[in-house]
Image 1 (cartoon, rainbow over the protein chains, first blue to last red):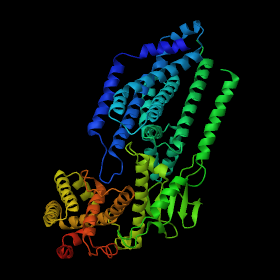
Image 2 (image 1 turned 30 degrees about the horizontal axis):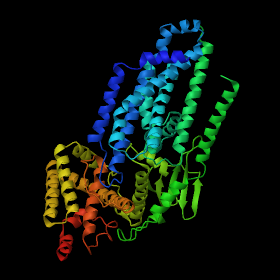
Image 3 (image 1 turned 90 degrees about the horizontal axis):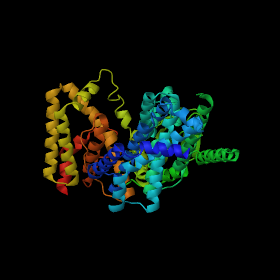
Image 4 (image 1 turned 180 degrees about the horizontal axis):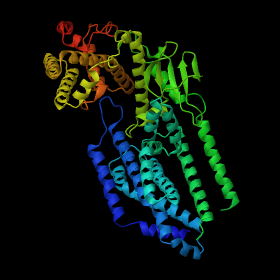
Length: 256
Length: 315
C-alpha cells in the first residue's frame, strides 16, 4: 500500500497547482497583513492578534477548498481507468486501494495547505508573532490535520457519489463548517421547530470553525480547557473509522 | 489489521467520547459562571445611578447533544434547570411568564463561537461576553424605569406605520447615507474634543439631515421616522454606552469614538446613541438621566437646547 500511496503522491504533488497555491496563499497573507485588519472602536483585541487570527481563518477556509478540489474525483477516476484490476493482479486488494487513495488525498491536501501557509511561516519567523516554537508547530499541525480530515471525508463521499455531486457537497461542507457555530446559532435563534431540528442535524457536520479556534488558541498560547481539542480528536477518530469501514465495505462488495 | 489493534482503536474512541461527555457535565461550566459573576459585580453607580447588573436573573441556553435544549436560570438562588420552557438562543432582554425581566444568555463558549470571525482571542472574547451581559442587563434596567411603558405602541409594529418603508428608502439613498455619516463624524469629533465649534458643527450636520428628510418625505412620515430613530437611539445607544464603558473598565483602555460607516436598519443607532450619551454625560452637574427613560424626551432635546449650553457655559 505504501508504494501505491507514493505513486499517488508522485502523480499529484508538485507542478503548477502547487506554485499557484503558494502564490495565492502568499497574496492572501500579504493582503490581510497590509489592509485586512478587522478593527473597530472599543475593540479590546490587540492588533497583532486580530491580524494573525484572520490569517488562520482565511487560510483554513482556502485549505478546505483545496482539500475538496484534490479529493473530489480521484476514486471515481481510479475506478474509471480500470487501474483497480491491474493492482489487484499485483495482490493489492480493493480495500487497500481505497484506503491508499484516501490517505494519499489527505497527504496531498496537507502538503497543499502547507504550501498555502509558506508566506505566513516567513512572517511568523521574521516579523515576530505572539507565539512560541511549540505553539506554532501545534497550531500548524492542527491546521494540516483539519485539511487532511476534510480530504478523507470527501474521499469517502466519492466512493458512493459522482465527483460533481461530491464537489458541491464538499464546498458546502467547507462553507457550513467554517461558520458552523454561527449558522447553528441562527437556526436556533429563529425559534422554529425546523430550525431546531436542522441545528441538531448540524452536529453531524465537522465544526471547522471550532477546529480553527483550536489552531488559533494553540498559536496564541492560550490553550485551555481542552474541549475544542477533544471535539477535534473525536471527529478525527470518527473520520478515520468511517474511512476504514468504507474501504472494507468497498472491498467486500465490489467484484471486478 | 490485527484484532488487538481494532480493539485498541475502539477503546481510544470510547475514551474520547467519555472525555467529551464529562467535559459537558454540570448545568453551566465554571468559566461561564466566573465571567458572569465578575460582570454582575461591576459598579456602575458613577456611570448610571441606580443601574446594578447583578440584580437581574439570567436564563442561559443549554445545548444538549441528543435531548431537547433547555434553559438554566441563574439568580440569587443559584443554578437550576427550567424544563417546561422552550429556550431562546439569544443575547437579549426578555420578560418571563411570571412577569420578571430576565437576561437571555448563552454560555461563554457558545458566545465566542457565535461572535468570533477569526479576529478574537480568548481574553477579548471573555471581555465582550461580560460587556454583552451588562448591555442586556441595562435593557432590564430600562424596562424597570418604564421605558417600554412610554413606548407601549411599539414604534415599528403599529398598524399602517410608514417607518419600514421610509427606513428602506433611506438605507438605499446615497445622499441620506452621506448626510448621516457626516453627522456621525461631527458627533465623534465632538465626543473627542469638547468645543463650541464642534457643537455647532454637530447641530449644522443634524439640521442638514433633517432638512433633507423633510424635502423627501411628508411631515407625518418624517415625524414617525424621527420617533423611531429616537426610540432606538435611546434603547440601544445607552446600552451600547454601558457596554463600551464595561469594555473600558475591564480592559483598562480609554473609550474610543470612531465610525465604520453607515449601518442599515437599527444598527446605526447603537453608535449614534453611544456618542450622544457620552457627550451629555461629559457635562458636569447636568442631570439628563433621571427622566430619560420614563419620558419621551430625546437626545436632541438635550443636545441642541438651552440646558446643555447653560451647563457648558457655567463650566
